[in-house]
Amino acid sequence: MPAIVLIGAQWGDEGKGKATDLLGSRVDYVVKFNGGNNAGHTVVIGDEKYALHLLPSGILTPGVTPVIANGVVVDIQVLFDELEALMARGLDVSKLLISANAHVITQYHRTIDKVTERFLGKRQIGTTGRGIGPAYADKINRVGIRIQDLFDENILRQKVEGALDQKNHLLVKVYNRRAIAASEVVDDLLSYAERLRPMVADTGLILNQALDAGKTVLFEGGQATMLDVDHGTYPFVTSSNATSGGAATGSGVAPNRFDRVIGIVKAYATRVGSGPFPTELFDESGEFLRSAGFEFGTTTGRPRRTGWYDAPVARYAARINGITDFVLTKLDVLTGLESIRVCVAYDVDGVRFDEMPVNQSDFHHAVPIYEDFPGWTDDITGVTEFDQLPKNARDYVLAVEAMSGSRISAIGVGPGRDAIVVRHDLIG
Image (tube, rainbow, N blue to C red; front, side, top):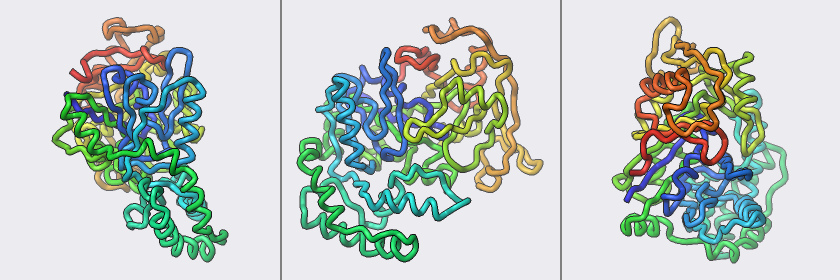
């Protein structure tokens, strides 16, 4: 049975939560393998809307075991806030598993994230200020706190004291902030230990055993390809590997066990925060997409930057992730536009680039080369078959598919759980 990786193929907010939910009834485990509570998934079930930040989307599907794997950084207060909010709405969250090797976001990570970003001034990256980057930095610097450390007070205290030795000098002498007491951090983390204990497991072992037993496991990436720390628009990226390769390192499941890689793309493009975005719109079309698509961050509430579909970015994502299937979301948002543009290449100082420039400066100065497509006015939110779409909508999908490096297997035509047109089976 398959191990399936599901990733964002643009700058995030593509609708991964909906795609995960679409597959949920046929999946036994849903695994979050990177990131933290710096990105959100919105899932609409009937009249109910659920905004998830740290929890895997699969937690909303009965029978699915949701897993927070070792590649995730966990803000424990956010974790319990989300769990309690779901329980208050009648959902069963008792099957959640958390890797003992996942790293913990502490209060000093959040503090350093905020003061560092402020200190950068005009060079700000656009971080959410939730401590994600500093927690990953500590992981790489080998001074991080892991979930398992909460169950050994002596080790926890030693690690927190070691981490704060340097950080307090930075906070006091560079940022003019108060020093953070190690005991304050330790006491806070220990207060969660017993509530956490039943959820903590060797998730890598459990997932491999599940695959051995013929179970279907879905690996859900946070953020997206263009925010990957290695392959994205560095330095305007997240602090983890949001591409398909991150599913292996972030979960303990070997690469040769993955059967499919599903890339999620919007029928247009959005971005939150700073960094290059060649197709960004500053006109009425951009406002139309923002309003019609309700393009405001699930986690931050910030208005998203909007732009036309970027085919070179989609091809790049298909290539480095090994995407076998695309899910094209929010096609309905384009309804009502007289003309729809697609970026097919870039012009950089008079030179045409059909693929993403490897040089960041070139990408920053890239001017889109567009192809125009006629729009449609018919309401498509009730469509269930591809042939039921207006001809111009079908033509748009087929043109985008031909440019993007892999087949489009499903199309989102509305915000509802069932508002999706399936062209090819995503699991079979």
